[in-house]
Image (cartoon, rainbow, N blue to C red; front, side, top):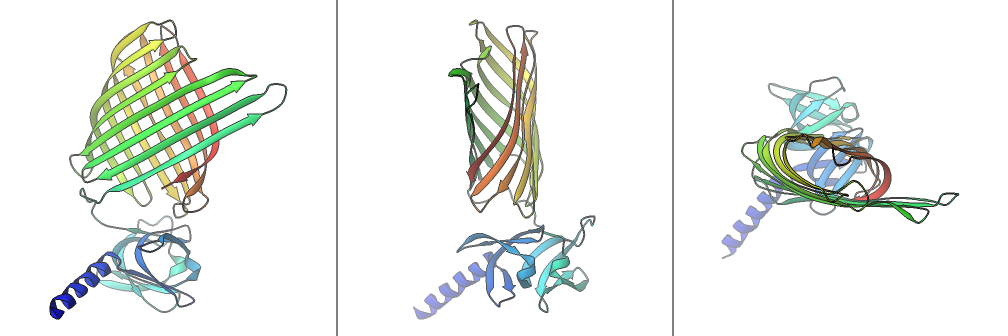
Length: 337
């Protein structure tokens, strides 16, 4: 029994060491065990089992040791080389390349990104954000404006779920100028590491614009160009069925071809995020000329969960029954997970 217990304990230790195989030694002698996520902008991100993801100043790091393979860039213009990290003298790391080894000061490394084959099967991963933007003016023309937006993604195996919801409200001199809510759900199934099949549904209700309600269901192929520690980019082409109701109670049902995209890029060890997402539709009916819905913005992480955001949104529908042309520029705060 003692032998069996000892074997189980050693197996658990071996499993833990295989998962948390990286070691960071600080200048004060402290050691941090975890998984190195990224080195960028003078910061090192380390995912730990006991404190979440830590952001460390590379000037405070004495040595690095990892069994992972990294794409190492010494300068911004470098294409990078694959290497493993072994401990060296204080302030340096030994870069083990194929067929060679080179000592390098840690502070001179521009970027480290883990290099591993993209796995289709993964644990359940949930991420998202909730942001609130508000603007209150008190002068000759009093106005109140606020916008609440939720975006969430759930990933498991070959499946990727996307949920989003938004509510916008604006009053000017006690008169409503904007009153709209939107909800959407998307489901992606990865056929290969990059190709996926997408299904999407979206509903918008506006109490004031010419286009009062929009409901859309669509499906089609998509391609994931990249998805790593530095960002992600995907695009898809969908065949959709749309139902519109206008302020004059006229209705239009039509099909359309929609091209959509989702781009995001992280800077300064994920402290700053730039994103651009949207879609453009070409309806198969003369009643609606085209549809456009896109959003671009910046998010700055204040700490591990709070962020500050700036974003621009543009939604446009050109039709015979009435048009929608809404541009919004928003600034707000939120939480991410």
